Length: 129
Image (cartoon, rainbow, N blue to C red):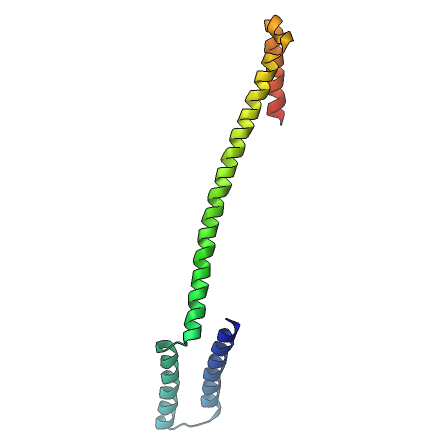
């Protein structure tokens, strides 16, 4: 791809040289100026109509890479959202397990007021996290 870009730069530099030559060589006749402009326009048209195969391949490769990056970004976003949802579910499950464990302790089974207090304390500790 670097070779293709260098080749394109060389072609553009050739066009710049032609323009510079036109500006520096005072050919003020209408025929001379018209001839130079026609030559320059022909070179530009040829570059547009018959692009170099390597240049076209490089362009297609770049477009392909761009499409691949877009699809990778979409896949990564999807995976991120899935992981975030799973983490949220695990967090909720963990909170529920801690609340159940606090409720299931023997001292809570005997005194209903202590049970409510322990569950409330566990819930407040989870909310702080």
